[in-house]
Amino acid sequence: MRILMLGDIYGNVGRRLVKMRLSGLRREIAADWVIANGENATGGAGLSPKHRDELMKAGVDAVTGGNHIFARPDWHELVASSRCAERTLRPHNLGGDVLPGRGWVILERPGVSPIAVINLAGRIFMEPGECPFRWADELHKRVPKGIPILVDFHAEATSEKIAMAIYLDGRVALVAGTHTHVQTSDERILPGGTAAITDLGMTGPSGGIIGVEAGTILDRFVKGYSDRFTCADGPGVIEGIFLDIDEHGVGKSIERIRVREET
Image 1 (tube, rainbow, N blue to C red):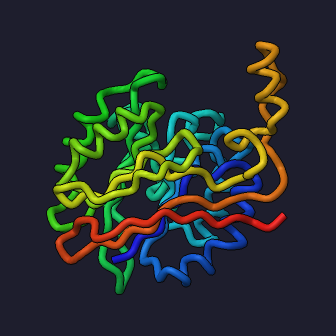
Image 2: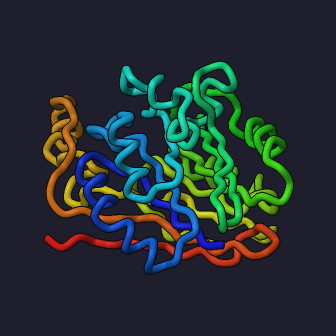
């Protein structure tokens, strides 16, 4: 089985890239499933149901979230009961089984082997949440044996993301970090067979600062204040990985991808 997983889709540039390039990229690498983090797809903070539907129409099979998935007032609608909502995840340790929505799903389609996706958030330099390691154990139990598991661990601290990958080594097919919008070069297969990368990167504008218009961010650093963040414009970049899973349900190979849009 081959998986394509995209880093955080940011704003209108990220959505445009997905709509224009995903179908061709999916064919090129013969991906069975496409997973993408979409917590910043609407205006750089949150995800509207309309934009979620656009991403899925473009070929994204499941959309994972992060701390910004709750940024919009319509987030309840985003995870309400529907076929698309079932494939729209929030970090499960942010709200557990109490809040609407959930952080895990089993994807099934005729002619393709099923796969499970788990979404968790870190706690270092992040909003308060329940222990992601404890929830990783619990959600692992809920997935039927024999179905490979992909984990989107939305976290700030590099150490916490590496720790999660090592903690789950041998139990899941992949632990991919998201959130920083900066792709790391440490993709690898761990000793137990779990593929890992500290951060997938970003699908969005390449000329700003992690997706935001550069001048706004510079004001925040240089002057100590800034206007409201706005999404950068211009050419973009698609970043992520593709993963091969072997017949035993563990990582066979992992490779970074970066597709730059022409100016």
